[in-house]
Length: 267
Ligand code: NAI
Image (cartoon, rainbow, N blue to C red):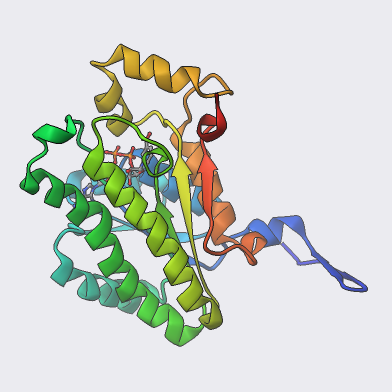
């Protein structure tokens, strides 16, 4: 679509579709074969991006890319293998071109009373949700900084906002992600690289079903403090990711955007 630009004094208005468009952009989405990551990939392809999804299960990734269409591709990768991440970025850039958007979506949860959490349990969650997020972000950001262009998204959680019982390691990992967003946004701003988080409320995916299915009290508690009175859909996160990655969010960095039906402010 042809871009229509109207300059009125200090105000520059561009065609609304073009500022939200991801046309010509390349996005790497970890854990994009299912759940929230899949819907982020779907929304981004609808907005015009080429997406590369990663995950551990080739079959799931293959099925996902077939449904997503020809602008979706996959690479099998386990984010916890930190030594593989520089090579992953190099391969993707050599095959598809420079990565414009990184979405650190892959994550795991574990529900256990804090006193029963072993060091190995704690390490496992932190390794996937925090160490891997940093290592992959560093690998992509080196190149984005050199090109003076890029947008990095993290997926945080309500567990970083308030005390949800029995998810101590998960909450620590997501709180770490929130801190990382602020530091990286400060460091990378002068290189035109933005860093933001989305903090999903309770979104209907396998992860949420596992946490809620045998725990109706938890489910009712989550729903009762959500003013919109319903759980979110993965697509709700997908469209927020499109917005934050687009030019429309060009002056937004270091932010954590709750996409939660009001859960974080519900009384
Ligand atoms: P999910 O369990 O449905 O999907 C997670 C995805 O990450 C899967 O595709 C899985 O294969 C992938 N993954 C896990 N470990 C990986 C590894 N080592 N390497 C590569 N891929 C890996 O979970 P969901 O709900 O879609 O979660 C996505 C993100 O959203 C996570 O970071 C989660 O913490 C976050 N989140 C989810 C919420 C929800 O209510 N569903 C709420 C708040 C945050």
